[in-house]
Image (cartoon, rainbow, N blue to C red; front, side, top):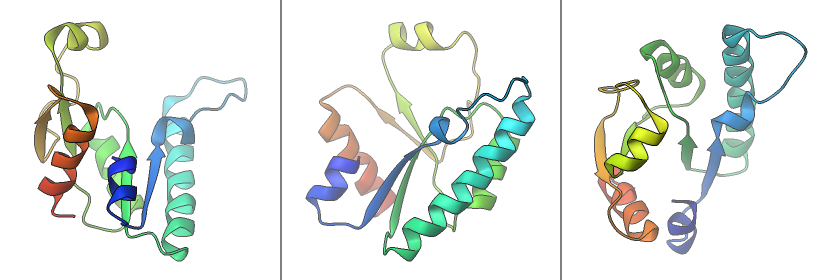
Amino acid sequence: MADQLERRGMPYAAIDLDWLRWFDVGWDDSEAARRVMIANLEAVTGNYLAAGVRFLVLALSIEHPHELEAIRSAVPPPLRVVRLVVDIETIERWFEDDTGAGLEDFAVANDRPLPLVAAEVIDRLGW
């Protein structure tokens, strides 16, 4: 998506939210890690918006509605959720249940070259 936005000359930032919660201080507390991720997201988003970014592409596998609501609280609206649809073998490799199902605003099939998938997501978002 970042490549497609860049090609279109659109001011964007791409953020992998896993990186914003990837740390280790010797304790295992997923709620604390989520809070750190949200605090980091607020800071990074603010910096990008102040620099002139208009479009944010956030990457994360969202498993629960409370995670989505926390992310919504950290970025300016509108926040749209896209489920990337992939072949069954890939799904089976990554998921054993319907974790996060139903949280998306729309789904896009990942059945063609990545630039075409990214372009469809951007178009469907109305960007």
